[in-house]
Length: 270
Image 1 (cartoon, rainbow, N blue to C red):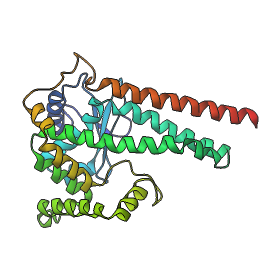
Image 2: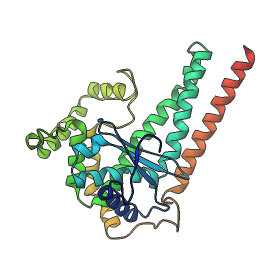
Image 3: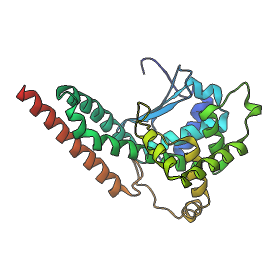
Image 4: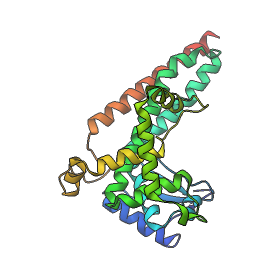
């Protein structure tokens, strides 16, 4: 709130109207808060549980058209709807705690927490695929969701007329074909898990495109479009697969508590 613009009826009114429609379509209550941050990087994120909020950078607004901006809003709302935000916040703390443990034990503690970190990033990449589905459900049109992925991968406002969605789809198919080579699968796993210095929190855009296209022709998606899905409760986030989400949260919370106890034990022994 201190260094962004809070979106509302008199601030970014067009964006606010799109946002409210996405909130309505995903049946989210109460309405999260939306902020615009002055940042040329085309990025956005959602955090918070009891008082969730979404931040989108001006880079998003400058690069995408209105349908694509709506796609981004729906994607971030999907994180809130699915209850991803609390796990992300807990895991952010766990990453800091893991780093502190590594320093206290001269790196030995990193071995203790490595499994937790790998599990979190694997889960987070899967969470992005779920939010992509939320975006498709709101848009009910695959093309703006795919064009959003293309532009966020390497789009240019100046040369937009020279970018082809069909070519990007072909690129996605060519990338999937690489998996026929087992060595390429190993390379992919290494890249995802930090071989280039950092672990990736998002799947590659061409993979997200592949999985979303497959889901768009699935029976599950068609059933949801017909209205055959579990309804959300009167307030709060959707309770579809709630037991699984609660188990994930509890498992992560338990591992974080164990991590904290290990840090406290090491501090006492110094």
